[in-house]
Amino acid sequence: MITEQEFRRIVVYVKQKYGIDLNGKQILVNGRMENYLLRNGYSGYDEYMTKVENNPKGEEARNLINVLTTNHTYFMREFEHMEFMRKIILPQIKAKEAARKDVRIWSAASSTGEEPYTIAMVLKDYFGLEHRMWDTKVLATDLSTKVLGHAQKGVYLKEQIEPLPENWKRHYFKRLNAMEYQATQELRNEVIFRQFNLMNPFPFHKKFHIVFMRNVMIYFDDATKLQLLRRVYDFLEPGGYLFIGTTESIDRRGTNFQYVEPSIYRK
Image 1 (cartoon, one colour):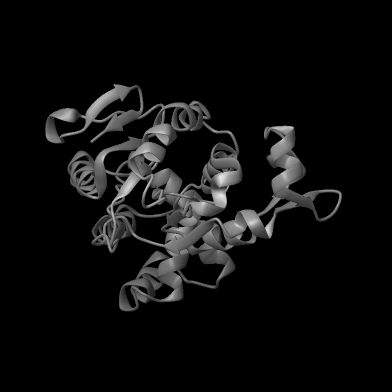
Image 2 (cartoon, rainbow, N blue to C red):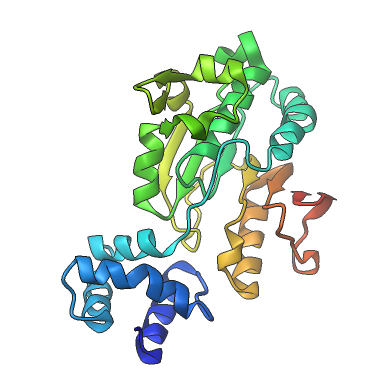
């Protein structure tokens, strides 16, 4: 069992590097890390953390995040956001960007890819025959290299794609075998996957029309959350939208976001 001292060492490191607040999550950390340490021949937490701290860009530091962060996502999750985007936001962007024909959307915690691929399918549906005249590529980032690898392959179990509309399944997925389907190359080309730590300076050259940052701020304390929201605000186009998880909320006193409806905010 992890000791208080070992736990604090992990808490401090993860908060410093990634902004993730693990306070009070000792059982979760132990449950996830114990098997990993045993499988990989470590004598204990201290030996492992020394290796991580000595090489923060190395494989073990990446594995620490892969093991600790939950990546629970699925197709059609909180689909009311996609409906809002299609009915309300995309017509606004289409009018505003008629000359540049450029739609900029960021999926900021893309996990295994269900969210950005769903966004891409909505965009393809909405623009229809005009789609090829528009740049609608979706930027999808995550802290975990493991889930990004999964997302880039775009392979999902039959039951995972089950909730999708029939025509989407037909158009955007091909059957690999009795159990698995893969997103078509055409759909995969619509999403740019990148590893990114939300605590790092934002490297973007252009501002976004929409940012999806759903179910990620649950890991952050209030100060970190506020700092992140202010940076997202700065990187949104005037009138741009932020989506957060339907169980999350923003304390608007610290930011300039305007409340639109639950879990939807606007610059």
